Image 1 (tube, rainbow, N blue to C red):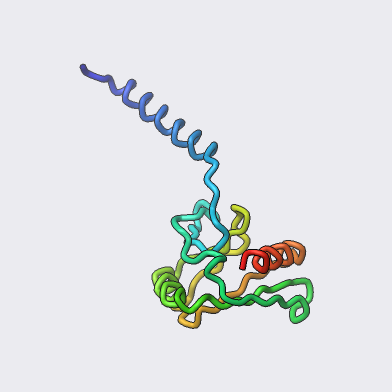
Image 2: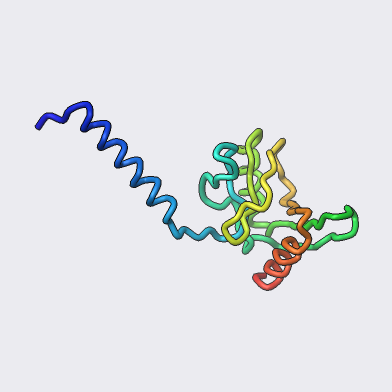
Length: 140
């Protein structure tokens, strides 16, 4: 069976539409945590979680040091620090994002390997940060 050029284009178009529909209708839920994030399309999660909130050892909140901003400071569990260091090294010059309830809350560009296991999550939306902090304390 020979398929014409026009039929090939139509088939490719229909396949692309199916991919878009499938992706748009996907009910994929992501566990809260840190993920690789792309620049384009903006804040698109690129893969599996680097670490999840279950991997957080301690978290604290600061709502006073920077007016109009709330910051969660955290440290990973000891067993996850090497994985974090390796993942951040691989992402130098690229972004990772903190995902909460399937939304990228922040996505900094990584400048160096982070060997300490420390991280921070911030936003000018204090209510959101307080919600995240409350969730972290309930999960752990």
